[in-house]
Image 1: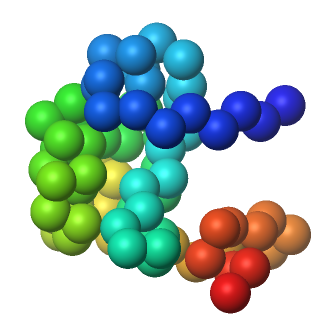
Image 2: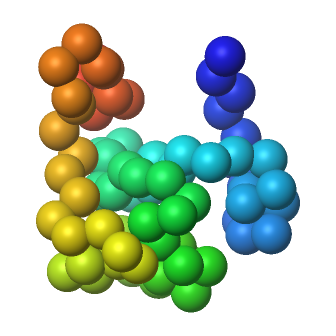
Length: 76
């Protein structure tokens, strides 16, 4: 099941979801799990629209879809 939540309340986002997609000006700038990014890093992603080099424990998280997975950016 999927649910789209648009919020600037970081605690709410962590309580409701385990996967995040950060978009800026209609472009997907980062996607990953709550385990891969700290709250502070998520705030920075939302505010700046640019991903840190290695948020949380993730290294080089890509905005490209995995095989068989679509992203908002892939709907062009």
